[in-house]
Length: 377
Ligand SMILES: *Cc1c(COP(=O)(O)O)cnc(C)c1O
Image 1 (tube, protein in one colour):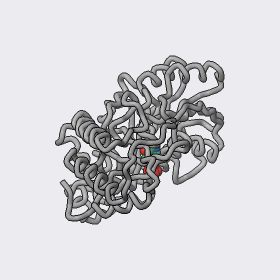
Image 2 (tube, helix red, strand yellow):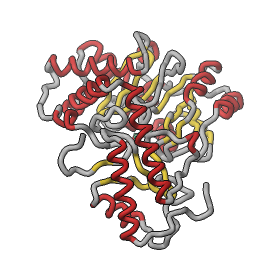
Image 3 (cartoon, helix red, strand yellow):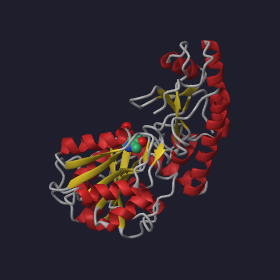
């Protein structure tokens, strides 16, 4: 699956891509070229199909990393006098709050411990406390710890209360099931370089067409105006402004492989095998995951750092990298952790070898007490 001696990225994007995906970038495309614009059109249709969006939803791609699309979605789809409830259990939820502040959208934070899910009951109570809330901005898979929030139940609460739902599904889209027919949302945001296994450089927003069409004038920004991008693309089949042509071509190739491999069910199953292999292998070394199994998503796992005084993340990281595996620092505020991703064009064999590289590294470092200090959470 892997080309040459490049390291394996055990990070939640950018991630390890297949050679077919990389090879799709060895060609230059003109942005006016009908062939290129057909690729964009086919991508958008396939992305809507992944959530069974039919004719009621449209996909609007946007240049930039995933955050650009989150910001564009909130700025375009939440009216200026709207008010956003943000259930907050991690770094990406905090980023949405920051976006709301920048954009001047009124917002309410619903604070939740970073090892616990946003419950439908807590969201319902928050909506009842403040009827002026118009939208809920929900992170599906909080990549900060690797935690999966119960999106279907949250969507049901939003629907019952007549609130809009904007979903950051960046690290779940394509691998975990999201079906608009039982999980209705206004808009869902994801990107090229996560579970679809493309390269980074573009995001996309799958939104209800009726809302997109009614959103003219909401955006504070020309470059981030999804309404404008949507209308222009409908009219011309082209992107407004220079498209990330190689990224688009690579995502087309990645989606072809995704579909040929069996789509979401197969992608999710491979990631679950990777995740189980990882957790079992790390447990055998003495590592303990930060999250309880029932809230752990099969995308990225946070482990407690060893309590041993010989442990230091930078040294550990560099030694594991020299063995060919790129780990990820922790993103939690209260406990010392590190993260290992299970996504990308890798299978359980690479995960097994990564655990082996971690074991050899710890031995060289003289780290013996792998179990974390007693304080948890
Ligand atoms: C990766 C990710 C994003 C986007 O991050 P970028 O660095 O802008 O690509 C947003 N939300 C979640 C949950 C993510 O995992």
